[in-house]
Figure 1: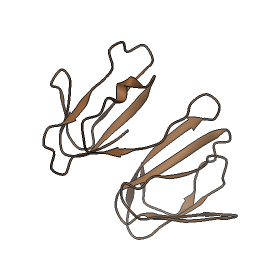
Figure 2: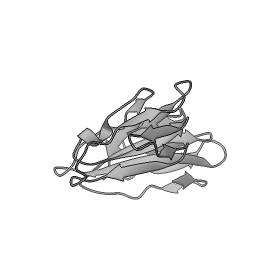
Figure 3: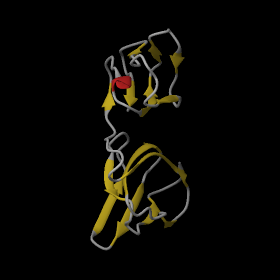
Length: 140
C-alpha cells in the first residue's frame, strides 16, 4: 500500500495485523495507548486490527506491506530471509521479493516487488532460492 497523506487506518476487528515499511520516510501510527514510528524498512510491527489508528506521514509518500490474518482461523508472522527457503511447506502463505532475484524449483525468476502466494491444495512444497546471494531478501 502507498501512504501519502494523514488519516485514519481502517479498523478490522478480529484481525491480527502486521505492517512493514518497504520504502519512503515512513509513518507515525498512534491511538490510545499506541505510539509507533514505522520508519525502519523491513522491520515488521504487529498490532490488533481493531485499533483505531491515526496515521501521519513522516515526510513524503511511503510504501508498506500489510499482512492481515483472521484471528482464530490463521496465524503467522512476516519473516525476512536471505537464504534458500521452503515457504510452501506451510499450508498457505505469501512471499514478496524485497531485493535480488529469487528462483523457484522450476527456474522461474521473481525480481524485487514481485511475489507469489500458495494455498493448501498446492501439492509439492514450494522452494525458493536467491539467484545472487549478495543482498537478496525475501519476506514471507
